[in-house]
Every structure is written in C-alpha cells, then in structure tokens.
Length: 111
Length: 111
Image (cartoon, rainbow over all chains, first blue to last red; front, top):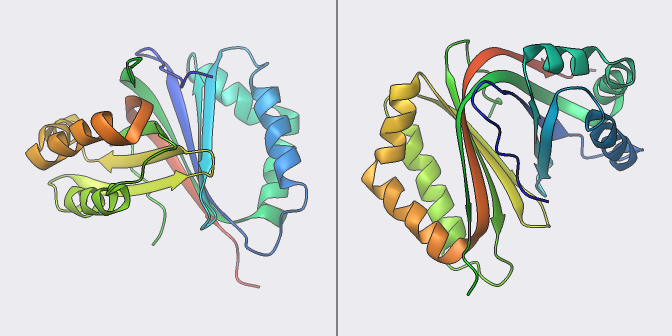
C-alpha cells in the first residue's frame, strides 16, 4: 500500500501513544477494526501506523478537511474504543491535529 | 521524556519510511545523531519516532514555525544524511509538513 501523500489543505491527525507493558487484551483486533472503520468514513484520505518494541506507537490519519477529522473523532464506535484505550491499553498519549501545507513521496528506482 | 504537545501555529513534519530489509549499515547511529542535531536547531520543539517489525517507521519533528522547519531541512549534515537514506536505507518514504491547529495529551492517573 503506498504511503499517504495528502494534498495541501488536508488534515493530519497524529496520535502518539505509549502502550502499557502488561496488557495486550484485544488491542490488535481493536486497532484493525478502527483502521477499517476509518477507511469507510467520509473524507478519509489514508492511514499509516508504526509501533516499536519500546511500546511507543505513532498513527497518522489523513482527512479531506477538519470537518471530516472531527466527524471521525465523534464517530460513536471510535469514541467507545478511545475510552477502552484509556481504561486498558495506554499509559499516555498525545494527539495533534494539523493542516497539511505540502507533501512529498520518494520511491527507490527499480534496479 | 513526555510526548511533544505543540501549540497552535507550530509546524509538524511527518516522515513515513520503509526501511530496506537487507541493510542496517550505520542507520541507528545516523538516526541518533540526527535526533541530537535536530534538538540543537533554533525553533526545535520536539521529536518522537517509532518503527515496527515490518520496517515501517514514522518520525514526527515539531518546529516553532515554517522557517525553522525549512532551516532544518536545509541544514547541511541533515541534507547529507538524507542522501544516505536514499542511497542505502530506504525503499520509499513520504513526508508531510503541516501547521498544528490543536494538541492534547493524556496520562494515566497514578493508581
């Protein structure tokens, strides 16, 4: 899957989180379900995520505009799963919403 | 280290990359050196990164304004190491520059 390359004017939501060491109950399933659900929302432009062995993860979701990003925030299943995150999965997180000014991609030329 | 929580008006640079499977030559050292160098630049507000077992990594750097983000892009050691990235370390990457509109953090209350 190509990495998202959102146009100027798109909105990026950057979610940085620290997983708790002691638990993984249902996390992978919930994350996959949320990714699939996000992709069906109006104004969805893309998603990419990474989590390292230290438990720090970053997820980027890209949206056509701020209204689409807010609608995803307020989506009931998404709100419910965020509550699960605070109850069970995360020690801490930070979230930034930002307006894309420019994007680039690069790919290794075929050898 | 607390996660960055940049104010409105800050600039976030989101770098998404796919590491090549076959090589790790000097990558960890270069990444650590760049993180330390970024932290000494004017207008630096913070940095966080994660890379999963599939080789997909996301690095977020936060800057006071667009001028600071561009100055970091043009920093000679940083430019040189980006060239190394294209020659050696990455199969592909995407980069977005975005203006922060709002940020939140959450931390698990002490039990």
